[in-house]
Image (cartoon, rainbow, N blue to C red; front, side, top):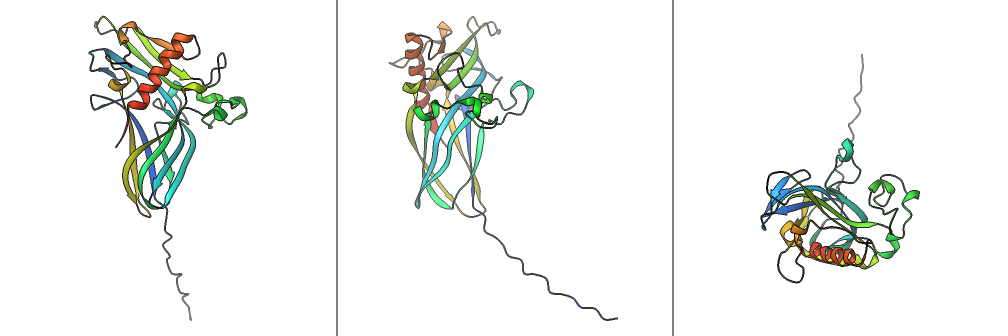
Length: 246
C-alpha cells in the first residue's frame, strides 16, 4: 500500500492592531464609587450614587504619528444593568487603534449643536443618541448631556431622606474639546486602559465661585428656568474641572 503525505501549509502570524479601553470612574477621596454605593464626602454628607450618565464626544488620541479618531459620540453609563437588563451603553469602551506612542486624549463633554438636533426616534436602539439612551427631553429641549442623581441623608440618621440631581443640556452647556496629557506606547497585539476619573469632591466644592451647597438638596433640570440654567452650567463647569486621567 502506497501513501503520500502532503506538506502542511506554513503558519503565518498576522499582525493585529493594538486595543485601547477607555474606562470611566467616580472617585470620592480616592475610592471608586459605583451605582448603589453609600459614601461620605469631604464635607461629611452621607450620599448614595443612583444615576451617572453623560455623553463624551469627538473622542480622539494624539500620538507621534498624528491623531486617531476613536468615536464621534458614546454614552457613558455607570448603570450597566439598568432595569434588570444589560444596557448597550456602558462604563467603558474598547477601540482598535494603530500602534503609536500616544501623548494626548482629546474629547468633549456633551453634544455639539448638530448632534443635539438629532431625531432620536429614527435611530437603532444601540445608538447612543437613540430614545433608548433615556437622555432625550421629549418634554423639554433636546438631549441631556450629563445626568447625575444621588440620595442624600441630610439629618445623618442613616436614611436617604432626599435626592440631589443635575441634568445639564442646551447648546450653551456643551463644552468643546478638552485635552489631557497621557503617556502610552502601544505595539501590535497589545492592549491597555486609560481611566478617566471624576472627583466627586471637585464636583461639589463648598467654597469659591463654583461652590454648590448640598444642604439645599438641589435638583436642577437645565431647561426649567434661569436659576436651573445657571446652576447646571456651574455644575457642568465643575464636571470638566473634576476630570483626571490615569
